[in-house]
Length: 413
Image 1 (cartoon, rainbow, N blue to C red):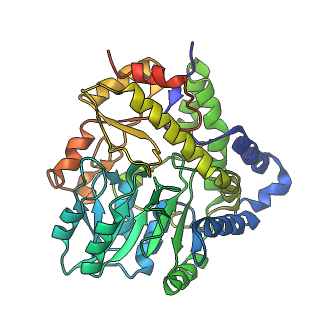
Image 2: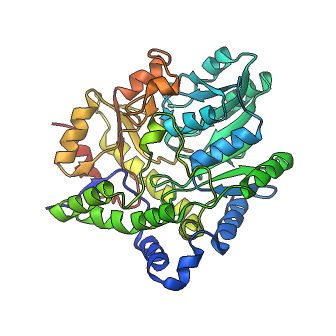
């Protein structure tokens, strides 16, 4: 029986990462450094070095916390509006709402899955104070046009680079165009420490405001850090033996017994805050990032290579639509659009391939409360149409060339 192939479930975790996590869990002399230690400073320096001179970085427990802190430092609050695209995640919406501001949903371009600049311009009002520019699946948005909108209406700008670490727009790294760039190191991102985030900016005044706020944040609870470290160890084992009963049982138990963390907590799906957000990035998780950070280009080169193989394998398949191809695309996942995607995913799962569903709802995941998000049906018709057909193929480092024909075969009867 062949091993199961996964799109998600911590796709960037390597044996080396498991050893790092185990060392923090098993060695008593490391227990005191779960929260505080030198790795937090090390990863901050790595981020600043990667994005170039005059870049200042700050790290947080998650991308969602980083985004909230950025909005707060920019003075966004009650009565303000923030432009955000549909075809996004509820945690982005929550960060806006937790400041007291109102998310204003902008429809997407069908070809890019990124915010439509003209529709953004049409939604601007005297209450609009900021715009969040998302680079969906690692394809840079039309930054020039969106920054023109921001300039015309005097908006604060944030780049959501949760999908696009390492992607470039006209030769420059995403995250370096706006007032601030937000990075995410969640379990299914370009690199991962299970849960983590960062902000980058060249605005010294903004940095000092962010730094003051960050220094006042609490440390992540020890229980939460332990869950994240156990995730790094247990999920790869569960995946390795998922095609057998043991693997499924292990992943079921860690979920039911709350041994590991959740990607998004039930409270967040209905717009409520989790008590430990925002907080500082734990030192133990920073150690995982320090290990993975030098691999950004290697990981992304692999993703692009697998994407090329998918494109070749799908030539002539007229029943499938694609996100636009672009040399700057890093393909965090390879998105496709087909009729009846739920049936396709079910068939693929039966054949041992777990395809992704980013996004099966205009605000993901598929079981969030759209009323709490402030989204009204038909508000963004292009995004709604795309979600009705969305499927993602895996591009992560565990997908090999020989896996591509098997994955493609699951898409068809």
